[in-house]
Image (cartoon, rainbow, N blue to C red; front, side):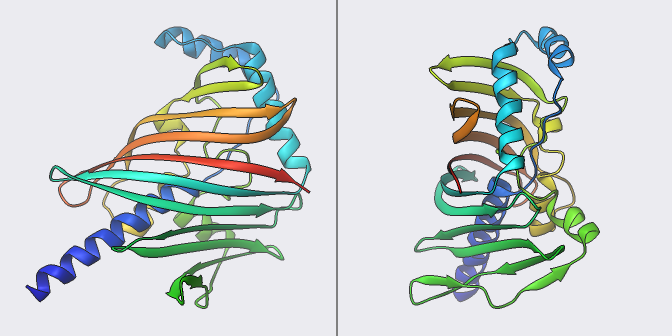
Length: 255
């Protein structure tokens, strides 16, 4: 009985860490002109790429790159293992400077799982630390330094844009869905080319997670990002295969 409990606890901890990581890691960038390529790509899959939506996305990425900002994030990850559903709530945020420095924190606390991860770049160096849960809060005392090459290999590119995804050659749908609100559907494989690294590293899996849906909705104040709500569906090669759905909302505040 004790062994069974230990195995079950270890399973949920590993799974929770994996889904936390997949939510907040990666990089977002967008060249100034990619509309013609994306329009051609979208035509092959029957999606629409609206020129105004792409223009706003490019402007929001440029604004974020040129200004310091902070974010607050809330999210939910749902997984189903051997037919048993499981939901984990996640919160955190980022502090990003236009000089390349950043702090990226993701925390999750429930009766079953208490896990947290902090990643930083300061003074040109990278650091990663796990959180220890004490007195109803996380403390980060086990900081590990990494070179840029090590960080990229283990955790993907730094998450310093408005979304964590790789956007170049990955936008298959871009539409205007409301007043200053735009929806983007991405190619699952292309958009997660970097962010998938961290899931594989954390789980120690033999293969990368397989994504079948990546999309996000961007709310703006003119050409400045205000809110991003994203949805991912993916499968990891652990415990006989685990299907996950991650949803998160990130609110931006520019200094």
